[in-house]
Length: 426
Image (cartoon, rainbow, N blue to C red):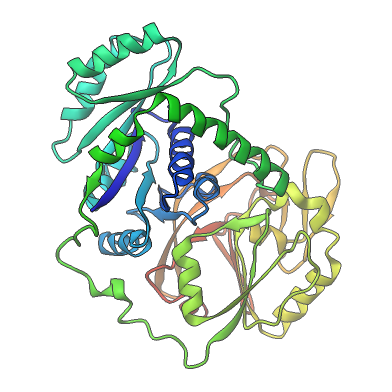
């Protein structure tokens, strides 16, 4: 038995991440070990949850992975934790197709209760039918209690609490309206300075939650059996019985810094099964480690174009490595680093990149491209997601994947937690 919960909301923008960060930090200060999870594929939220808990966040997504695999990951990473906390995605019942992939589906899959966050700005007793509807819409969605956000006064909270009780739900407290409680935009790199400021912000949120939220009540309401039971029929693939690691572990060089950090935890665990990982920083370093495989994950390299274009030695090493037949996987922003150039604004400087791919990128007129994506490569379907703020300079370029010798690059972030990454090069 241990407290386990999924934080969701009536709609996006209700303050799920804010509340999750403060609750996690508050519990951590009590000496509890928290394992955070993030429903969906949001990399920024996952990094924030990691910062609040000091434990790496695990993504849970029913489109990227099988039910059994998700339950396996939940159990594996939550085993040593005192409390398991998942942050949902969008609104509670918002999925990619009706409820498919929604937070309610994930709560049912893991058999964990839900703490529903309700944005109470400019509303009062009308939250009663909203809460009642969320409690009764789906019979397999156990809502343990409600927390209100954007509450203007004690009188406002009293009205909301009465509405919550009349709707048959436990009222667990509230977060007040505060201009100081803000999180960075999604297009922000977590540099050391940004992390320090965020840590201070999370501490402030935790202090408010300690005063305004019944934390002990949440822990008691959400105490459940652990581990969660596997969905039948059980798939033995979760144990990777069909995956045979190479006889000799390979050397893997992985870019990891403020510009390159969009990774799935289970992807990294799979890399560890096939090799020994050495991390390097394209932003601050200049040497490419000795490697049999180079991994350039996504991130925000466009925010560090001025630093990256000066890494002449590193880019030369990458070109030489590729020409010798070395394997490189570049995703999202990693592909941008392998391109010819990046332009940040109209009429602005065009920063030279590694010049490994015949592509140019620009931020001019760029809009966020995001969503689930599927790639068919070597007769195998690979699933992932796209999340980028840059675009091809040549608008006619639409190819989802590029290959030069053993260099494979895509604007998508692939998930290979259930498969053998080396099959990409077969």
